[in-house]
Amino acid sequence: MTPQELAAQLARILTDIIGARAEVGIAVTPADTAVERPKNREHGDWASNAAMKFAKRIGANPRELAQEIAAAVAAVDGVAAAEVAGPGFINITLDAASAGETARRVVELGEAYGRSDMLAGQNINMEFVSANPTGPLHLGHTRWAALGDSISRVLRAAGAAVTNEYYINDAGAQMEKFGRSVLAAALGEPAPEDAYPGEYIQELGRKVVEQVPGLAELAANDRPAALAEAQEAAYQQQLVEIKDSLERFNVHFDVFFSERTLHTPGPDGEESPIAAAIDRLRAQGHVFEADDAIWVRTTDFGDDKDRVFTRGNGIFTYFAADAAYYLSKQDRGFGEKIYLLGADHHGYIGRLTAIAGAAGDDIETDITVLIGQLVNLNGARLSKRAGNIVELDDLLEWLGSDALRYWLARYPADSPLALDGEKLRSRTNDNPVFYVQYAHARTCAVDRNAAAAGIDRSAFEPGSLTHETETELLGKLQEYPGIVAGAAELREPHRIARYLEELAGAFHRWYDNCRVIPLGDEPVTDLHRTRLWLNDAAGQVIRNGLDLLGVSAPERL
RNA sequence: GCCUUGGUAGCUCAGUGGAUAGAGCACUUCUCUCCUAAAGAAGGUGUCGGAGGUUCGAUUCCUCUCCAGGGCACCA
Image: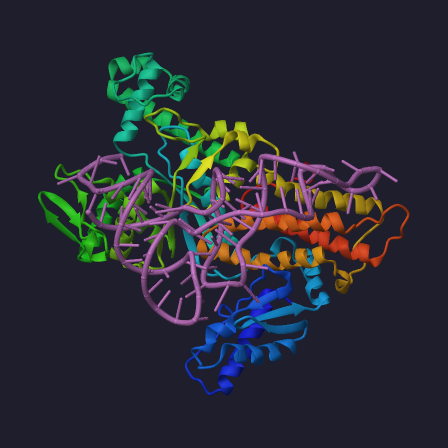
């Protein structure tokens, strides 16, 4: 009996009761009757507040309605008891055997345990990081990389098709500045006035010299040509390094989308995607001209001011490219488009949403803009100007991918987050990833020792898992599918991390109380064999959960 | 000024209208001849920033307010 099955039973019972009272127009879904794990063990295995929720709507006394429901629930197969408590809670206790079945279910489902088809049929575009290819990824991008990839994994676990996408801002003034900076470095010239700072520019300069033979000669004869060559070579090199860094961070993108392609006309002289996008929106009646500029009326879709597409000097704004990019996502068949942005881009929500509306999409369901707070490091906020940038590669070398990903994914996006390097380096409980990974390694150690002791899973007696810590552990395992579903629905992978910490705790307490391998020369019984199932189930769920966070589950620590 | 996100234990933070508001850290004391002590057990801590409101019930929802971060470009 899982909590989901219990909720379905409750919904059926409540529907019958409401039907018997001849109430009409009141529908009950399993979401209305979702059961909770009570904090207090005396309140049973699962509790429902459905009676209190519905009492008023059908004009009933909450406690009497609860009594009526409880009587029907108590008759359900697998339920040991259902009692009414307080203002109308229904506290449900399961048969030990019914709860214990969870261990076998988890082991048999393996990696599939916790996955669902809740979002089946949804084709989601998940855009995140999208850092300029003019330098290495730093801590500021790292949170979005960890969070975005975990959101994507959770959505996939819920059955959605998800494309991870990185938008490369490879057009415009920043790229030209980048090109000038690298060319100067390559030629050994002093850095231009507004050049990008950083040692990496010098390294890129050296690599560009290797990749573009005769660059110095070319620069002497045709400076613009040399600049173009240097810029392109540096860009390709930097992009490769960004991709390598992300792969080392266990973050994989399906599509790297180049902004430049939006500015490029078609091979047979067709207009560029940006120009085409503006035409499309004009045909829909959303574009107008004023003050020598071309505008889009985003205020029709809730933006606080209209936006410019083409400036007075005839050049497209950055936002025009954003609009064309959105249309590209729409054309490629994506339903929901998710943008994961830092709080410094908060001002973009209104205009991005408006473009979705202008493009004919439903702004409630087809676009989601997730805004996250920026990261601090040891109290000092990161700023390019202050120069205290920590690169992703440095962080990976310093802290390791697992600790970094876990820490960054364990807080809600809108929670301010401080990265304490010393804490993440310390291998203590200050660092929760070790607590969880250790629990997993322990399940593996038990497996190894059980095999050596000749204990296998040839017997399974679910009714024998009755120790207090076993009931707790089973309850936690039963919660997992609901946790994944909730994390997917709310796009909050930190729920997975918090759950894993609770699960690890329940496992450690069980481990301390219930042995899988008998002491000394005691005989091996079916209880030991049954516990091996539970041990393996716990390991499986920790593994499944860590995978959703992109964190490894080592067999030994 | 307007928009937005925070304010919960000494610290870092969980908590999608429910029962006595939780975890880790820090502090004290226990538990390894036996599956990994990177663990477990016990010990106390709160004006949930403040004030109103909504209701059977509010840390959670609404309004106002105080404090803090971020944002309000024909920049990228």
